Image 1 (tube, rainbow, N blue to C red):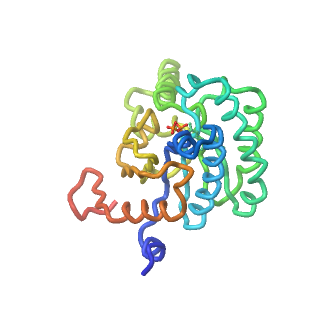
Image 2: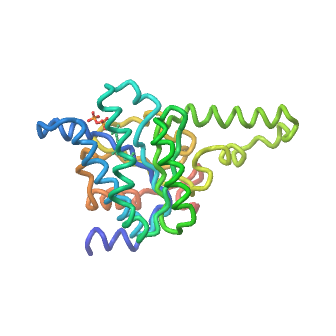
Length: 246
Ligand code: FPP
């Protein structure tokens, strides 16, 4: 049986997240500018999103720009800020056909106005779609996400809207950007680095982690299936004993 057929007969995760690392190194190895690596990375995101949708994954969260990425050279930031618009242009029709919904997670106040407008437009236009939800984490950081949630909950407590006993996991989940998404099953980081880098810290509590050697532009359909195959061979216990079901 081929790798693909084997994976397709197994448990398909509902929500996967990807740290799309290594665009710069991929380009450097080929004597190309870093921005070319991001262009290839963006194209690869379109392909992998389609594959995930095709095989029934419900949500794909991707780390496209972190709260720390503002420290990069201006030229690179400008390029990264143009990617959502390029992404929208080249993928409008295909995403519509595939019924893919797009949401953005992260701060919005630091973007150029045209990026803020694009985010609102794309979310609004795709909000009723029933296929995969592509969650683009853009100016995203877990510390910020969690702290914003804690502040909102504290505010409700101060106003007397909730009691101390109401503060539980479900309430916290409902204050995170991922509130509409299924539990995170699997995190993939490309490019050989084995760090979480302030990505989905709360959501990762019981997720499986998979570190791929390939740089993001080279992480294709076959590599994704290899990661899913590896995921399916693991025995997730969620703190219980061997053989426990979810
Ligand atoms: C990490 O590689 C990658 C990024 C910081 C950018 C990722 C963004 C995309 C793939 C496109 C996103 C698309 C949309 C729609 C916003 P790196 O630059 O850290 O590579 P390096 O570690 O090799 O230097």
